[in-house]
Image (cartoon, rainbow, N blue to C red; front, side):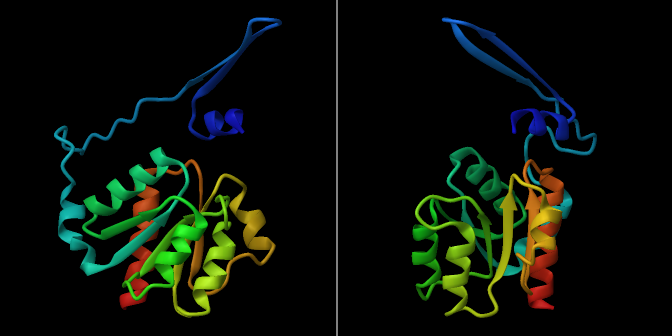
Length: 176
């Protein structure tokens, strides 16, 4: 899995192991360079113009770093974002009366996996839009009939721009 992540990211993975001393894994990733970005970290013009259209997005991800990154992207795009760190907490939010226009969820979650959470939530919210995240091959899940209408998938690791485009497309379809 580590090797696959490094390879997809055009990086390198070096593993050093010594009997009795342990193993060290070093992951080298290319530095992100975006010629058009503002060095202050402020959202670009495209993000500011979108305004998020008032949409509310629930992020369900057990990895704190990944969850934080997605929340930051959503806020830069102008969407209201709420988060849960496991499937049961996500389902609790989805079963409430709280407005949620899109769910972005990892598939492999503690307590309830992402698919179990979504299936239970869709009993109450039939038109719920869902963006699944997975570290596995996207086309294998699609071929197995995993995705239903209103669902799509993104494979980790993903480029932030790719994630943002998927989010925009799903929310624009929902409002269009």
